[in-house]
Length: 480
Length: 80
Ligand SMILES: Cc1cc2nc3c(=O)[nH]c(=O)nc-3n(C[C@H](O)[C@H](O)[C@H](O)COP(=O)(O)OP(=O)(O)OC[C@H]3O[C@@H](n4cnc5c(N)ncnc54)[C@H](O)[C@@H]3O)c2cc1C
Ligand code: FES
Image (cartoon, rainbow over all chains, first blue to last red; front, top):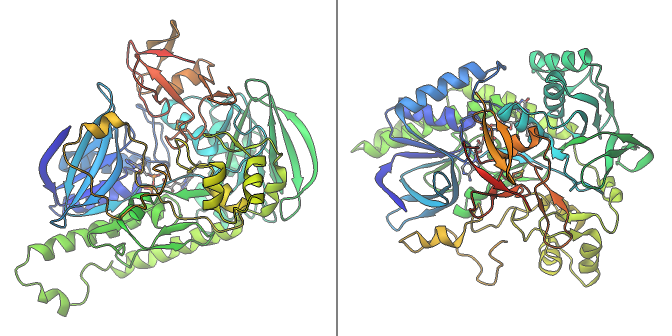
């Protein structure tokens, strides 16, 4: 185990636009900062890039920020945070795992403050054949391309709902994949009136639209991939025309080798819920961390920025990171001032300047409008068959979920205990939303004592007993 | 300059900075393990470390996520 003896003024988890902006703002204000990210390069979802980056909107500036940060802070890449615990003295311990060079190793960082900037992941929905190799999330296909320069496949179908199918499809088409179409399950707007255009991202969206047009990629609404077929890999998909609730009107089978799917995002909030941060329901019902005007959570010393505080795109994420960084720097100054009363008289020095606050409101409204334009409709449940896996890790088919319900499981938690969906390696990240829908309830906030599975070997390398911030129900399954 | 890793003894080229998962995909290997119960083939799904579908054993170590692990010259990968 490495036990770094320094206590950082701020530890940031997440090296996307939110985390880098927050860390850099605080470091420029003189704070001792560490930033931790699982990835091998800074970037997060949107600014993910190869070792030799290709130009993309905003990327040059992000890379400059990253370099400025590396000169002023400890940037720990390849480190995954699995838990943050509160110490008796009020400080925080950030528990990380790193795998290179020689297997798993535990690293602990001491921090006075924490910024949660862990982003989000794609929200998939199950359908027959969705576990065949060649079916990837839209974010996964994009990550392969942006991070490794690798095309997910040659004949690709993009399907799901939401504005971010556009960049994923445009990226694949521009890199040489034959994109057979973008099949958007929701309807109405069409590409010419796409909300990305209507809501001020005109430049960016026009670029994607032009790319799709240039490569003759059709963009069709009220359509979706409802099944994938193949022996050991995807060989074809069933494409369906849908009514407004996503019930199937008609369908046809199309040959392809790859499917990229995504039905919105799941904000990664478990580090916040572990610490007891209050959550709220986002526009689409997903739990997100509740923050105030300065991006402060309900837990002292803990801030959140970017997607964990609500989905709204990379510009909002970066802005929230800057606002959080300023507030954290103000908090640090206040701690260092003998007489803090001055702050109480002059209002809230941590609150963002009005121009930041206005811009944030604008981007938040944009994010909310997108979520309203692209809801998940219940008809997808009709795409499943009895043997369709709902949980990929524990290989739980729909029939077992229905069986659990017939045995009296009335909510997602009871379904989990009886049929075990969400009890495997991914801890329900992939199937959690679907299981909640099948159980007829809104998506639940994660209750995971660890944000990532940890091996016993790594735990054994720790010398201190763990003190979880919130007591765990001893009867709970550890993977819960 | 590319280097090589071996997959079940077969050389697979890697562009520096690529993950094991990206290198396998680029070489046309899209599944590298089977599931415990149904024996279903699995490879990349989320691509960002969330789903654990892509677990793979490198240099005899315990399984790791291929989508996160950067390939290094001489890595030996075994698929199931
Ligand atoms: C397919 C797809 C396409 C998208 N396209 C666009 C687009 O075109 N335009 C746009 O504005 N937005 C797009 N987005 C949304 C995009 O995710 C956000 O706009 C932006 O990346 C959010 O920034 P962030 O800093 O909040 O999170 P991210 O950029 O996701 O960064 C979060 C970082 O935290 C790290 N992390 C998470 N958990 C841990 C942990 N426990 N320990 C250590 N590190 C951790 C991750 O590795 C990641 O690097 C897209 C998303 C997807 C999935
Ligand atoms: S592909 Fe999901 S964890 Fe690697």
